[in-house]
Image 1: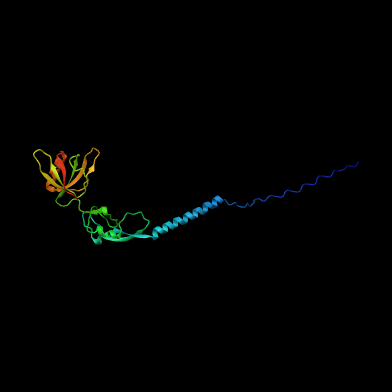
Image 2: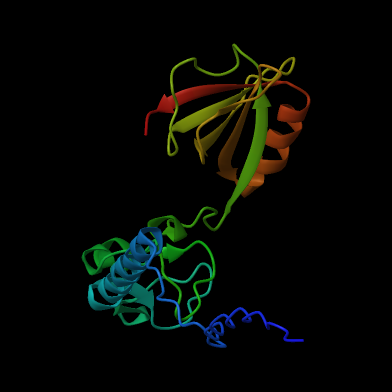
Length: 212
């Protein structure tokens, strides 16, 4: 007996093996490119700014020697140095040297510090004088504006005492919250205790005798 063998289905072509690693082409993000350009630009601007700080210099006055409070500033006490132009530093220019020399130091000025006009001036307490602080109500001092250096008389309001004490305003009167005024007056040493006592007992009035 003959048997007919059916032809077998031809084997399908074997699958092409996929490479173990497929190299993909990197995509460039426009946002990342823009960010990179921005960072480079900012870096360049920062470098230019720092360069300008160091390249642009300006001359300023500096203390060459230590000067104690109350001492008179001499020309050799000052020097001129260069600092970066963009440095946030409060200092005087060399042209202000004349405003400093010959003035008394109102505070200690160590070597290397930068003197300012508010650091120097006349001695706030001349020899033989005392500074008396007074508090005066309305009506006990002029209503017009008063300035430092104004010559005044402190008039006694005590019974049987019509004397007056000569003085000079050390600072303009300052209005206080209670409606009174605080004022500092330079008087002679011999009158200081009496002026302070009369002021403490509210028995003083201030009269201007010569404007500043």
